[in-house]
Length: 290
Image (tube, rainbow, N blue to C red):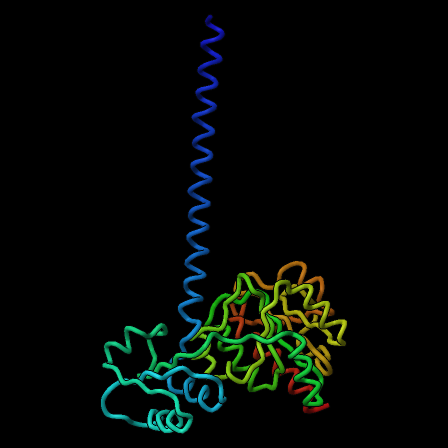
């Protein structure tokens, strides 16, 4: 009888402990699901809105579809008049609203009194990037971003890439910033002139690029070769790793060569956008002076 009571107590303790584990897992699952929903909600918010005078002006000059443009009521100065004239020329609806309403609509907190409502950003395919380079009769010049999550970094990188003549940028579909109003504004409208592809698997894409004749250059501090010592001419794909973590292990293994940037100070790393700019323009310099 005593043994049976002891066994019953043990079973009760097991059920109690198990319930605790299940509850904790349930809480974790709910938290993860909540984060995922917040991430999706954030993407949805930015899908159809371009803000800031330079970004909207670049959008108008690109000829892409615009549903309507909201501007602040009152006196119009500077580039806003150019935006209004261009919008009227393209027969785009202009809606004037009070400053408070415009600020409530803004997602960047610095819309400069103008917001364009547009269809969701259209990503291209990797094949389109290579075809674009071929049409220009140039060696393919591609940027591969391995998990850049900060939209400000993504916007800065797009701006630098566009000015340097990069034919396209490749980003993963998950764990990466996507093109939104913040990215567009930081890029100063360069998004409208850049081919950007979203892919399921960065490693498969790197293999595809290599099969199409591109050399893949990775960036990491754990290597002996400096970026200016490496031949960066010809068909090239440059990989920029995520903020804080760098390239993933498999991506690093798939690179043909890896280079580093010399650091002389006490800070052990550079901003991802700055690193991208240094490597991109080293390649541009080598191509010009070859």
